Length: 205
Image 1: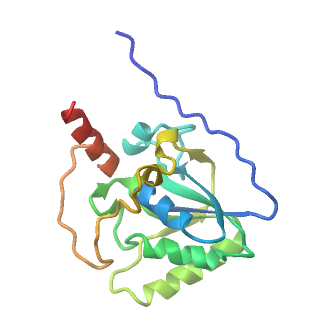
Image 2: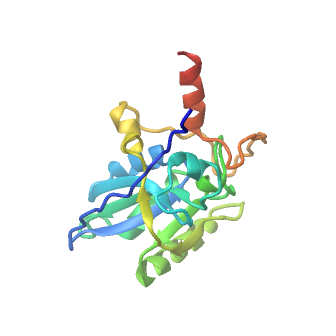
């Protein structure tokens, strides 16, 4: 039997001069992408993988925890219609930045909270925004702020995943400082909603 090979080759993207880019990691990228797509001034979104070392990783590789990548959303936006600071507000509002490598039931380093900055201005804005948010939280914010690196678009079926299915969110309804029940994981890189849905789907066939 010949083992199947999963390929994920990043496709080139055309970004107009009048459009800026921002990249955020906040756990499962399905719901995060859906949130940003509702914002006026956001011209395009792409879910993918960044912050790691593996080139052109597949979703399976990212979930293994060995690639170093985070699930992320790359946001194209018109600065004349929406500011980077406003996008940061959307980022904070759509995940829990106080949990390490975890969002709800999604576990693993690929679920880490991260802001991938493209220039010193974005870095300064991200740090100022984090500091302001920290003043409203009891728990320390663990969001990493790091220079943007190669971004690899995820497989096509992940793009606008919820929108294609008429859904708006996949996040578990947890308050930022709400205690989470410890869940043991037998998967090295953790577990994800997608993995759970895949198991459910396979059990029905």
